[in-house]
Image (cartoon, rainbow, N blue to C red; front, top):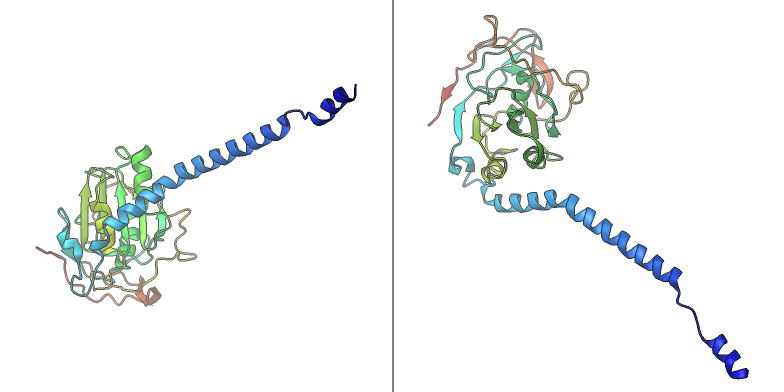
Length: 270
């Protein structure tokens, strides 16, 4: 009897509660890690793409590395030629990448616009050193759209928007530079951004100008919409002198009014 009582006292049951709790914690931890890896994959992949494009960063010896990127088209445009919010410009390129533009720039602080934005505001942002990724919303959707968005979200001096009727799936713009592409995986997207975003070597007119939202003039959550119609006979030409009453930038801010002084005409570069 004593032996039997001893065996009952010393024998312990299997701690199923503890085992179940540990298994649940391990499973939860695994799910969290998997979720993180899946969600962070686009950012990690983008970091790799940016590292691969780092050799296109501008230097004093190589002030405009975009000249080494196949397919980049360039043109010379005069800066600080402004129109009023009610006026349109008859641009010479689609999408435009320079020329007269609205007195207020579009917010370009890593902004992904879900809807097309008034072109004249977007062009002003290029004058400040921004890169604008435009895409054809009929051709770029789903994973392709996400792949472009990760290039922009949270990236200073970068913005993105649909551009209805675009003749290529993707078009990149900086002031005086454009690159049209078919594939969102194309490494030239990252090379273009590395070469031209906030390039300090005089490739755009207003080095150091702001990309922040302009309170009371441009709301990035409700921007002026894109006008798909053809500009009418009252649209301002590319050699426009600037509208009386339109403000000009002064150190990146809204400053003096335009005097209407003549602006040199644009000319394509080789």
